[in-house]
Image (tube, rainbow, N blue to C red):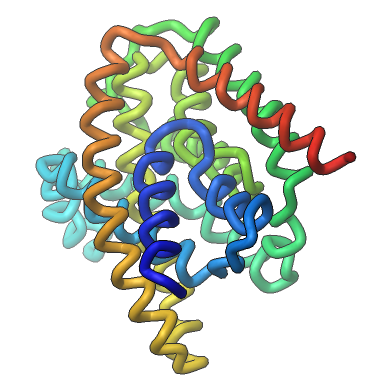
Length: 267
């Protein structure tokens, strides 16, 4: 894979990962709409890992708080706020891990990597985002996250395995439906992405080692580094913007892109 191709993939991933427009959908569309080869799931996960480090650094205080609470999970005794946060993140990750394993075993993920699926997902879940954002109250904050809400949002997150859905977008939709403020809904979504990306990265990492595809591993490392810087810039921009702007611009983008994709898919 050429350096230009890796750079393009990493920039797309970094910029779109934290926006509710589906980074995975855009990565799948790149080879589908151009002459470039499909980068495969290994590179997909690699650029996600780059964004993982970006979100960990941006929310480093929360990440460190949760990390200090991990020993409490190991002892099955939740005694601190950090332990509770770590527990909530673990619970929120269970649904997507289970559904993801099922999709992988039965090859469902590869079956859904099509322009038509992405187009429909862009439109349908764009409408869901619009409705929840418009109708949801803004009475809850991220600090008031509960275990019940963690499981609830974990179920929403599992839906994001459908290409074009947007993991951040669907979790934000669920959080807005629960009444979390826009900025706090985005924060919860970003924190939930950390264990999810770690799980998917570990799964794909085993595949790389198993097939000894060191060329893909090298390309993945380059892509991860570039996506880190792109994701950091996009994250800083979006979190500041959300204090004054709704999610409607992202919805308009999703509807427009989804319509174009369906036109391409069916003609």
